[in-house]
Length: 489
Image (cartoon, rainbow, N blue to C red; front, side, top):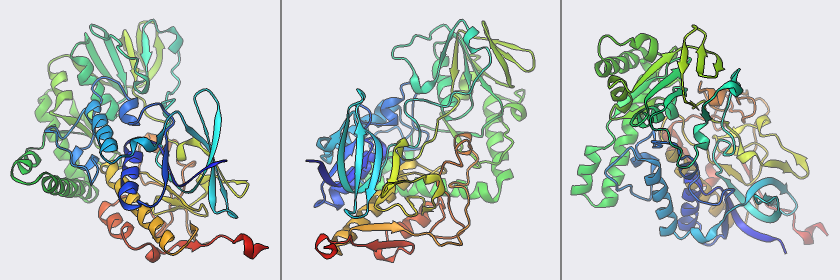
C-alpha cells in the first residue's frame, strides 16, 4: 500500500527543518514527513565545507523566529549554524520524520483524489512512491550536485588543482600554495582571508567589483540584552533591531544610492589607505543593493590585503595556462590552486518534474502568488527567501502562512487551494535583482505580475502584514472540495 501523509516537506536544510518545526507546533493533528536527498540534515550548512564558510547575515535574523540564537558571535561559521539546525530539529522532535537519501524526482497532482503522487529516488537509483495532500517545497534554490562552472579555455592544461567551493575536498592541504580565487561575491570574500592565513599568497580575480561592507562578527547590543533580559525577550528585541537596521540600509540605498556608495567607499579607503586604487577594485558599475551587499566580518579581507597575504586583480581571463591564468592585459597570475568561486546554479522546486492531471507543468510559465505559490498549481507552497535580507525571515513567514492555510482547509473540510491569475496580468521577472545567478535563469523562474497579490515584493514588513492574515482573506486563492466518489456514481 502506498504511504500517505497530510503534508510532505521537501528538504531538511535550514528552511525545511524550520517548516517542520512550525508544522509540529501549529499543525499538530496533521501527519507529515520530510524527504531529504542527501544523507544528512543541514542543507547548505552541511554541504559547503570550504575554508571559512560562514553566514553573510547576522544570526539574530538568519536564525528561526522561535529558536533564540545564543552564541556571542552574530556572524557565525558553518559548523555553528549546522549545530543550531541540528539542535532545533532535536528540540522540536522532527528528526524521526526525516527520510534521508530520498530525492524527489516527480510530483503529480491528481484532481480526482485531490492529492500529490510523489516519486522519490535513492542514490542507488531505486524509486519509491507516496501520496500527500499538501507539499511544502524547501529543497534550496540551487543545484547541490553542481555549481556554476563557466568554461575557461585551457583548463585542461593547468598543472595545479582547480576546485569549485561547492565541492571542496575534505582535508585538502593548501598551506604554502599560491592561490587564485576567481570571483568577488560572498563566497570569494569569505575564502580569500581564510585561505590567506596559511597560503603563500591569495589573489581575488574579478571581472568587476562588488559592493562590500565590513561589520563586527559580534553584536555587542544583542550580547548586552542577553545579560539583562530573559533569553527569548533578548532574542526578540535583537531580531527586531537588526531587521529594522537592515531595512533602513536597504531603503536608504534605494533612495540615495550615491550617498550609500560613497560611504562604503570611504570606509574601504580607511581600511586600505589612500594609495590603494579603490576606484578600480572596489567601485562597482551598479548601485548598492542592486545586487546583494557582501559582508566581511571584522574587515578580515582588508586586513589580509594590508598584510600582503592577499590582493585583488580586476581583469578578464584570456585562458588558463599550465602555470596559472593569463589575463586579457597579458599578465599571468601564477597559481598552484585555482578556486572557481563563480556561483551557483539556481533551480526551481529541486528540479523535480511537475505535472497536473497527467499534463507536464512548466513553472517558468506560471505566475507566482506572493512569491510562494504558483498559478494553477494546487496545494504547493515553495520557500524562497529574501535577496535583500536574511533568508530565514521570509522562510519563517512562508511556513507560518502554510500552517494557517492548511488549518483553514482542515477546519472548512476543503481539499485544495489553487492560485488563479487574472488573464490580463502582465509578466515581470520573478525577482528584481541583477545578480548573475538570477539573471542566468530568469526565463526558467516563475513570473511575477504587475500588481498584488502577484508581486514578489521582497519586503519583510509588507509580507508580514499580508501572510499572517486569515487564509480566507487572501485574494487570488481558489478553494474547493474534490468530487466525492458516491456523488460521481
